[in-house]
Length: 190
Image 1 (spheres, rainbow, N blue to C red):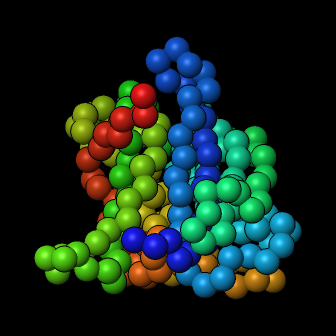
Image 2: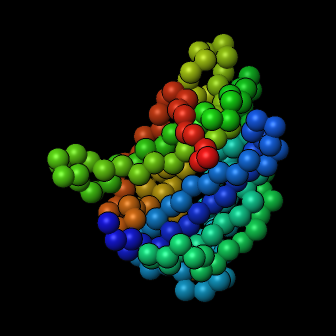
Image 3: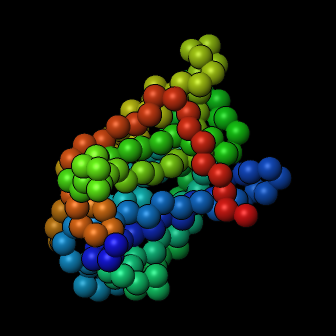
């Protein structure tokens, strides 16, 4: 599959198995042309960071954003952050670091068997309400992830630029979003 879309990677850290700064990230491909200047990239990064921080408790810090031209793994723009998560939910507790809230977004792309193709995002520092069942994502955090998915689905408006909608790496638009109601799992690379 040829990568035809620009993308943005948001890098975060959180405490994990004795490492106070375990890093994880999500990469988002988007429609249209990438921003044309560093200032425009930074405006897009700021908009996405502002939306994404609402998903995380204060133990997660957004540390960096990287912008990529189509087909490149060399950042065309970057910006450092020290933005802590702002999600607060009464009675919620953070589950182990391998656990994550999973956002699945359907796309217009179809597999060779004519099944829909999805793009996924994993948000570590998942929270549960112990009294409500140990596997269910805390309702407030689930709502925050759903709102974030809606932002990408409907387009993240960046002042002075345009609206950015999420796609597959090869440009198929997202058509829907679903936040898994149960805490999921994602291993960290070696």
